[in-house]
Image 1 (tube, rainbow, N blue to C red):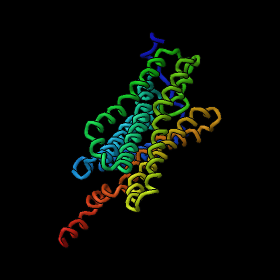
Image 2 (cartoon, rainbow, N blue to C red):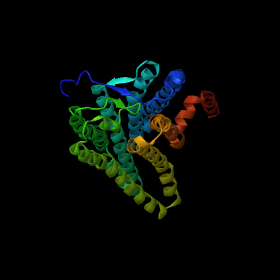
Image 3 (tube, rainbow, N blue to C red):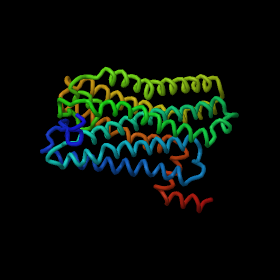
Image 4 (cartoon, helix red, strand yellow):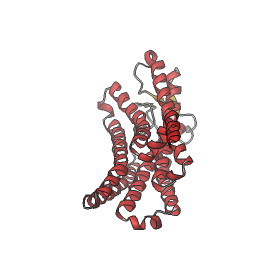
Length: 314
């Protein structure tokens, strides 16, 4: 395998009637990609520009949106090239690279959501200590862990897979996900055990931490004043919606791999498109509409006439 590593190509066999619908696929994918870039970038820029948004909560929101941009960039350009190509192929090293970035960014998002839940927990449950706990140093450490820990752990899995002998060169999908392991001549017990370790460490532990912090928040909010309950609902609901959305995305990914042989090709493609289409658009919509301060700045940006009228009245 080491000798053939640089010349091995994988055929992506997950497309349905590509000859007939290639331009429709391309237009849809291109349009969604542009919308993802514009929507996520707009909110990140608003957070960067306005000083009243330079708080840990908004910093973490910006980090999640940047993560979505990077995730989309890993998927969309390659898919758009495939739509217009006669052959849908990818080299084995490039497939491993896409696999690596795909799961690194997915793991990072769970850690970022966990960091956001911790920020909300401190803000609502320990308001007097918030400024001393959520310092710039704390935020920087949480961001560093979110963006460095998953890549370090997943790199081991990629290294173990890199020199596995391949007996199958057709991937039943349009992206390189866990289906890649089905191309190996023999299942590796080491890779399987390490994969479970990564799943627990990168997904299960952050989710359990998020559930714990939000349970504490809701319990304390329930026994507090109406103002505290309003603040909790206003700031925590968008994060929970994003968590649910992202967890559904992860469930799709698992189901696609586990039920691959039992799924019709069309259903397989639709589920894969669900993974890469809706979540990167869902995040900016939720944060743009549900986070009051971001929503205010968006309205001022998109409706300058109303902003000028307000300025004249004031």
